Length: 221
Ligand SMILES: CC(C)(COP(=O)(O)OP(=O)(O)OC[C@H]1O[C@@H](n2cnc3c(N)ncnc32)[C@H](O)[C@@H]1OP(=O)(O)O)[C@@H](O)C(=O)NCCC(=O)NCCS
Image 1 (cartoon, helix red, strand yellow):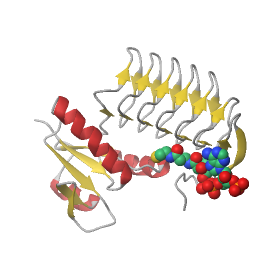
Image 2 (image 1 turned 180 degrees about the horizontal axis):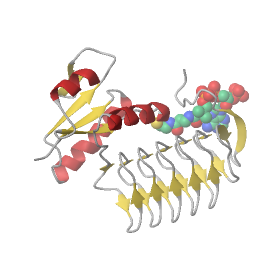
Image 3 (image 1 turned 90 degrees about the vertical axis):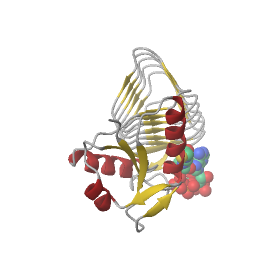
Image 4 (image 1 turned 30 degrees about the vertical axis):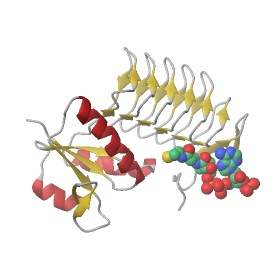
C-alpha cells in the first residue's frame, strides 16, 4: 500500500516542493495523499491538502503509513527537522523531478530533492537532504554533503567537495576540484575558483571571502 507524503513546511520551499510532488504523481503515482506539516499555525488546509503541527500528525500517522520530505530552505532547519522525523522512525523520501537527468553511477542519499532540468553526472554523491534546484549542473566525481543546497542554474565542476549544510546561491559557479567547507555560502552569481573555508561567505568573480556565516543562516535573521 502506498504511503502518505508529509511535506514539512508550508512556505516558499514547500510550495516549490509540492510542484515537484505533483509532477512526480502525474508521471507515476507514488503516494496515497499529501499532508503539510507546520508547527507555527493551527491545523487547517494548504494547497487543498490537510496541514497540521507535527505533534498532531504523529497521532494520525506512523512510519508504516507515512514518509517525510523536509521542505525548508534554511539548510540548518532542514537538517534539524530531518533528524527529528528520522528519530521518530519516519523515512525521508527523495523527490526527483521526472525532467531531471541523473546519470548512471550517481549516488543519492535520503531526502534528496532534484528539480526540473538539473543534471547530476556519473560518480556524483549527494548526501542526505541535499537539494539541487532547477537547471543546476553537477559534474563527474563531485560530492555534496548532507542538507546542502545547490541553487538554480549553479554549475559545479568535476571532483569538487561541497561540505555539509553549505549553500551555493543562484547562478554561482564552482571550478573543478574546489573544496567548499561545511556551512559555507557561495553568494548568488559568485565564481569560486579557490577552496572556501568552513563557514566562509564567498562573493564575486573571482570569488573572495567577504565574511563568516556565523549565524548559519542564509535568509537573514
Ligand atoms: C551572500 C548572501 C547570503 C549575503 O547576504 P547578507 O548577509 O544579507 O548580505 P547583504 O545583502 O547585507 O550584503 C552584504 C554586502 O555584501 C554584498 N553582497 C551581497 N551579496 C552579494 C553578491 N551575491 N555578490 C556581490 N556582493 C554581494 C552587498 O552588496 C553588501 O556590500 P556592502 O557591505 O559593501 O554594502 C546573499 O547575498 C546571497 O547571495 N544569498 C543567496 C540567495 C540565493 O541564491 N537564493 C537562492 C534562492 S532560494
